[in-house]
Image (cartoon, rainbow, N blue to C red; front, side, top):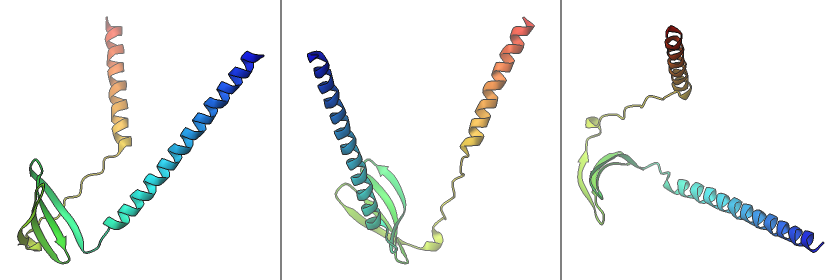
Length: 128
């Protein structure tokens, strides 16, 4: 009888710990979503946009920034940001669209390849 009561108490503690863990996990998820949404609203602006970034050395980047109607080339280092020049928008190349990869097509190709190799193995076994 005492053993059953001890097991029941242990099971109750385990369930309580799991419920507390799930509550903390849910609270963390909600907080993370809220902060991400808040920061996204802070970042979204209509007048300033980073058009392109190129790394030239560790902790050193060149960035093309659109500020209003002007395009500016900046050198961004660890501790400093330096304006190098103002760029003519007509000289900038438009961003090339990346081709969307269809996962279903890739999966079909892989399936056919694997099925083809199995068929080749079966044919080789029959020929022997």
